[in-house]
Structure formats: structure tokens, C-alpha cells
Amino acid sequence: MALPSPLATLPGPSPMPLFGWRGNMVRFFLDPIAYMDSMRASFGNVVPLARGGGGPLMLQAREAEGTVFAFGPECNQAVLSQMQLFHSVRIHGPSESRPFERLTAGLFNMNGEQHRQQRRLMQPAFHKKQLDGYRDLMVALTAHTLDRWKAGETRDLGAEFQRLTLAIANQTLFGLETTETVRSLGEHIAEQVSLFLSPGARLPAAVPFTPRRRLVAIAARVEHQLRSLIAEKQRLGTEQGDVLSTLLAAREEGGGRLTEDELIGQLFVLFLAGHDTTRSALSWALFLLSQYPKVMEQLGDELEGTLRGEPPSVEHLGRLPLLERVLKESLRLFTPAPFILRLTATPLELAGSPLPAGTEVVLSFYHTHRQPELYPEPLRFRPERWEGFSPSPFEYVPFGGGARMCIGAGFAMMEMKIILAMLLQRFRVELAPGARIDRKVQIVLSPKHGLPMRLLSREQTVGRSPTPVRGDVHQMVELPGAA
Ligand code: HEM
Image 1 (tube, protein in one colour):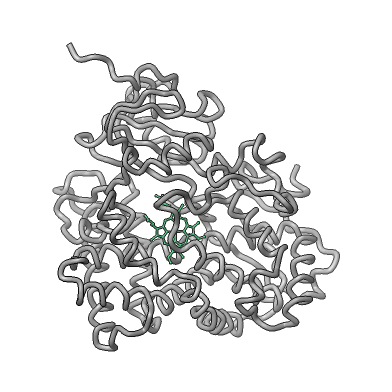
Image 2: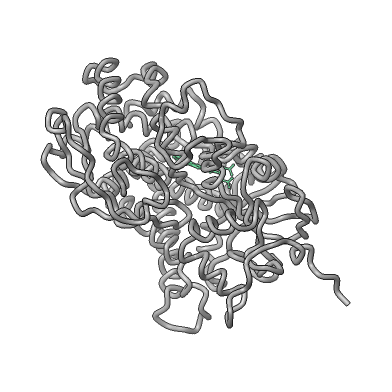
């Protein structure tokens, strides 16, 4: 007789009536933040998807026997600093799609020596000197966007940031103009992620008109578009110091150091990770500022006092303390990558809980950032908490940690500082009346209906109170004036 799984010893929620653990899985996918909120509040730091362990959440049954949610710095440290025990895993798409398999063969899904080697190849493009070289392009593309805006207009700043961060990623990382192909590539990648996360993607291949069918078609198109970008880059030459040049050069010289599939996979990861997270972070930062006009005013004063209407130079970026604190606090509250996924490679203990090999671990950074013992009054936006305060690398994890820590963290911070510094010297912002802010989690945590904002001149905002806001954002942050 087989021994019961150690997962069966962990306290957790009951499997749902009729549907069993699959019902719990659906509840998770409908609202991951709400599901994990209740797990953390009721059961502690390591909680199975359903009592008994449930089943795999995102992986396939042959790969994972059950799933746990893991919360808090102790779990972060154990998972992030032991890559050999907690593997990063490829989430399989439709079995009939070879392009999908190739697109998901990037850094995110590699382990051990292969991960180390590929990361070493990409690293030079993210060194400080190289990043400083991206400053001028970031400034020019931001100015180009802001020049189209006028005080008094209402715009969806979520969509504006989407276009701007895509253009910045494309031109700095790939050294290419933002053509129609690139724009539609961004849209197709977003659609691919959204289809992949829809329950219809798990229906059998034979069912027509399903998200699965569309996903197969979209993955083929994305791969085709990435191949066109590579061909275009080869035509232009690869001596430009951007990431794509570095990867292509490695491919040409390296005698198999980077296969064609790996190249496609790395580009897909960079496209995906290189702009969507930054778009999300900028959107939430602006939302918070719109709700805290006093902080927006103080930040405007800091920027105008230091920069005098000019875009920031590289040296300025380290001399804008309030801007730094606003971004840190916003990344804490609205962590763009709220959780990550790992698979246990051997039987082990996580924070005292026994896990068998083949357990999916969903590690929530979002919840670490809301622990009151680490962050007093955790639901309040308080940039001043960062004065003289440095949490440990596993207590503050917007960019992950350990050997897989975000390779683009410096790039993202620089980009967000430049965009906010330029934007807030030209405009103040106010949430459009009647706006609803709900969350959406499709890997990245975003405002579901975009971010409709009124652009105002500095004079127009004096003494104004923030626009009341509706939506489940109130579960995530305490807003001034909220009932
Ligand atoms: C605010 C913006 C960003 C946030 C919050 C963010 C967050 C993260 C997190 C949490 C991880 C760790 C994932 C894990 O451990 O599984 C990660 C990894 C990664 N990020 Fe970012 N990221 C951001 C911007 C960027 C940018 C701009 C780029 C590229 C230019 C980028 C490229 C990557 C890559 C390639 C990895 C995989 C690293 C590895 O596995 O070694 N990210 N990011």
C-alpha cells in the first residue's frame, strides 16, 4: 500500500463540493490574490491548494503531485537561495504547438548550468555602463509621448505606458525601430499570455473555436514575428551593444552556445518581462500619487527643484530621494509579479512543512510585502517608511532574489524614474470621475480596466481632493477619504 503523501498532513482548505480540488483551482484562477489572502489568514505559511495536497495548479499531472502556497521571508529565502532544490519549470502549452514550446524555452524555464551560462551571456547588456547608455533613448521616447499630451485631456495612462515601455524595450534591448510589426508583436504576446491562462486553453485539441485553437495560431504568429525581427537585426548588423546583438553574436561565434530555439525563447522572455512589469509598476505608482495629492505635490517640488524642468541625467537619478521612496513603496503595495512558481526537485522541508518531490510551490511576494511585523500599517501608502529603512533581501522582493533575481531591475528602475520625473514636471494627474480600479492578475498584477486619468497643470491641482474610486482596489490599499 502506498504511504500517504506528506502534503496530506498540512492544514488547508476543504476540497470544493462536487468538483474536489479542481474547484479550489478554479477559485484560485478567478482571483489569485483573494484566494491566497484567505489561505494566509486561515492556515499559515505553507498551505496546500486543498486539504490532502490537491493536484497540480499550472503544471501537468505527471510533473506535479500537489500544490502549496508559501508565504513570508523564511520561505522566500529557502526557495530563492536553493535553486537546486526548487526548480523553475516550463509551463506546457498545447501539445500540438511546437512554436509555443520554443517560445517558452527562455531564462525563466532553465535550471542549473544551462541557466548560469545563458544568464552570463545576457548579463553584459544590463551592466551599469550599458544601462547609462540607454538613458538618452529613454528620455527621447518619453518626450515623444508627452509631447502629444495636453492639460485638460483624459487618457488611459495604462495604454500610454504600454506603448511607451514597449517602444523603450524594443529600441534599447533590440536596437530596432518600433514598427507596426513590433506593436502587433506586443499585442500578440499579451493575447498569448491571456489565452494561455484561460480555462478554455485546457480543453482537448479537437474542440474547435476554443481559446486553445486561437492560442496555437497566436504562438505560431509570435514566433514568425520574432524570426522576422532577428532577420532584420542580422541585416542591420549586430555591433550595437544591445541585448539582441549580444545574443546574436554569441550564436554566431559560439559553436552551439545558443541554439536557435534558445534565442527565440530568450527574446520572448525579454519582450514579455521587459515591458509589461514596468507598465504595471508605473500605472500603480501614478494611481497612488493621484490618490495622495500631497505626496504628488512634494514629489513635483523635488523634481522641479533638482531638475529645473529638464529630464534627469544619469547622475540625477541617484539624487531624487522622494522619487526613489515613492517607487519602492508602490512596488511594495502593488508588486507587479505578485507570485512565482517553482517545483521541488527532491523531498524536503519548507519552513518546517514536509513536501514531497514534485510539489508545485506558489511563492507569494505580494503577501510578504503586507506583513505588519515587517511593514507597520501595511495597507497604507507611506513613502516616508523608507527613510533609513532597509529590509533584508528576502523581506522586500519586488524583483525576486538569489541567482534568478530580475536581470532587468536596474533597467526598470532607471526607466520608471525617467518617465515619472519627466511626466510630473509637465503634468499633475487626477483619476477620471467614476473610474473603477479592479485588479487583474495575468502573471502581472494590473488595473483591469486600464487607468483613465485627467491630465492637469500644476496650478489646477492646488487644494483639490482625490477623485473617489470604486473597485476591489480598496482590498489592497487604504485610500484617504475612503469610508
Ligand atoms: C518593475 C519592473 C520589473 C519587475 C517588478 C520584475 C520582476 C521580476 C521578478 C520577480 C523576477 C524573478 C522571477 C523568478 O524568480 O521566477 C524577474 C526575473 C526576470 N526579469 Fe524582471 N522585472 C521587471 C522588469 C524587467 C525588465 C525591464 C527586464 C528586461 C529588460 C526583465 C527581465 C527579467 C528576466 C530575463 C528575468 C529572469 C531572470 C532569471 O531567471 O535569471 N525584468 N523579474
